[in-house]
Image 1 (cartoon, rainbow, N blue to C red):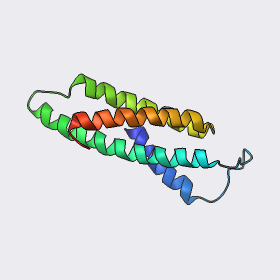
Image 2 (cartoon, rainbow, N blue to C red; image 1 turned 180 degrees about the vertical axis):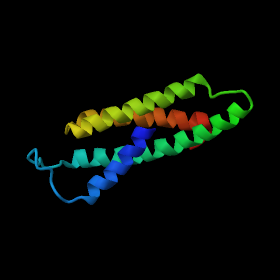
Image 3 (tube, rainbow, N blue to C red; image 1 turned 60 degrees about the vertical axis):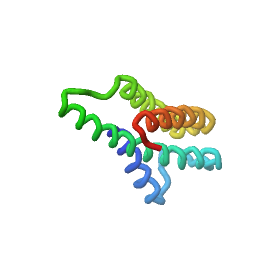
Amino acid sequence: MKYLIGLLLAAGVVSAQDTPKPSAPAQPETKTLKDAKKRLGLLATRAIANFRSADSIEANLNEHGQSLHPQLVTLRLRIEAALDEAQAAVDHNQPNDAKEALDTAQSLLERFAQRLGGA
């Protein structure tokens, strides 16, 4: 989750800067890559919201000597991994790989939210 928050903060900082990186020549950003970046930000935001809900539920369960179902924990880890994979693909200018990872993350996130009782 720390990575996701860092990702959102970094995206805001990067978008606020208008100076190009001096080390590598800038490649024109394709519409597909721009769409992947936007979708990544939206999914990461949604994931953070759901993870915070899960953390709250888990804290309440822990007070009663219970814990989250292991499948929820596993789903969370898989979502984080898919988002990390999507970020790496975006960073390496691989929009098709990013789309695949984002599709996976979205599907897992929908299952996670449904199991939490959300939308």
